Length: 138
Image (cartoon, rainbow, N blue to C red; front, top):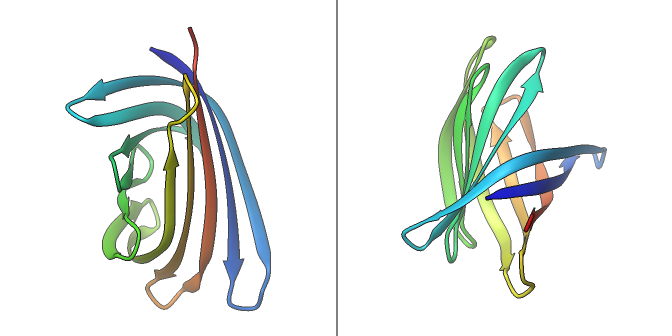
């Protein structure tokens, strides 16, 4: 099935600075077992990256393949460590999910809100707040 995807990420650093990243993309969506998968492509530094968002009952995982390779798992109340491979090298990312809300109450729409603390080795520490809206085209 076809879908449109909107992602707004607000990243707060230790000093209170806020960076906002917006992504709007066309996506493919399908269900497998009890999970929903949303797959979309975007460009990072001129190179295409494929991202798969896996939506489970109480967990969201985000996998990137291409110029960067990573898997990030977000589940409320849990911490996860993942590897983020980039052309600049390998980074270890730690996430601690404070809040995860997956809303499938509206027909043909999935809304995800997540808030988590993030630490990228000794390079960055902060908090991310993400809103993901997936609208399924009929």
